[in-house]
Amino acid sequence: MEIIPLSIPTPFYVGDVNVYLVREDPVTLIDVGPKTKEAAEALRRKLKRNGVEFSDIRRIVLTHAHEDHCGLAKSVRDEAKNAEIWVHGWETGHLFGRLAAESHRMLMERAGVPESVFSEMRRTYEEISLLTDSLADSDLSELSDGMELEFESGSLSVLHTPGHTPGSCSFIREADRTVVCGDCVLKRITPNPIVSPDPVDGTSRFRSLAEYLVSLARIRSFSPTLVYGGHGEPIWDFEEIFNRYVRAIDERQKKVVGFVSRDGVTAWDVAQRLFPDAIGRDVHRFLAISEAVAHLDYAAGEGKIGFETGGGAEYYRS
Image 1 (tube, rainbow, N blue to C red):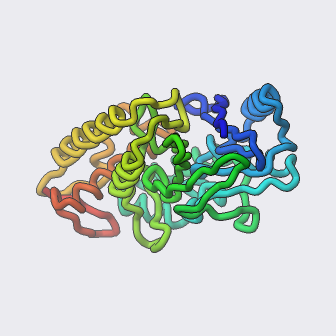
Image 2: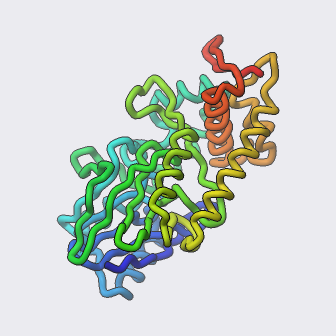
């Protein structure tokens, strides 16, 4: 069973997204790229080089539901006529925009984000959401941890690897320990744990960094020989990447805890200090807030800082 990487352009700063093709029956795409003319043309062209047309696709599997990964799912499915789309049940990005739900407003208020800033971020993501077609639950089949995606000469096991998003999934070919992991592991950058409502209790926040560290450790437990990420080059040295991530997270933890005073700070306060050059820039602002929230939640969970609620916002104290 050959896994074929296809690099597809995106309009985002992160650059091209990696889509993966398995030509064996049922012909499968893992992720599809954003809904842009350039991405659709590139995907069609690169599939054709491998002897595959959109109409040949029988299964679309999504690592997670961010626009650069899932945007073309409906277009490919519609042209293929009977292709199934598989995604984990904890994902929501294919259902509505990233900041569209009222639960997102609640999370940003708790983080101390001013209403004017939230409104600007929501408008930005309303535009970004145009890069994917909305899908209904009835359009989807649900991935679950431990299930097998069968092919003619092998299978991929589904690993639920939450962190970057609640429903992020990876896929392992256990015969040679090859892993396709979306944005869980990337060669050049440390993935961002995105602030999200908890998929089990929508009034709470998903503890993204704690879950992400568990997911990293789980992938490590398989001793992967080759890791295909959602962006950038393949990873042949997972242990080196793992240790680099752990060091980077530990260093950022120390910096974040150092920003917490006895008087109390919000995640918005910390985000502005942690990323002063990014806090005013389109999607970077939301990513900065997500990073601050994730690290504050983790530090509070580890007992490094205190946590309390007042006036509708959450405050962290040394």
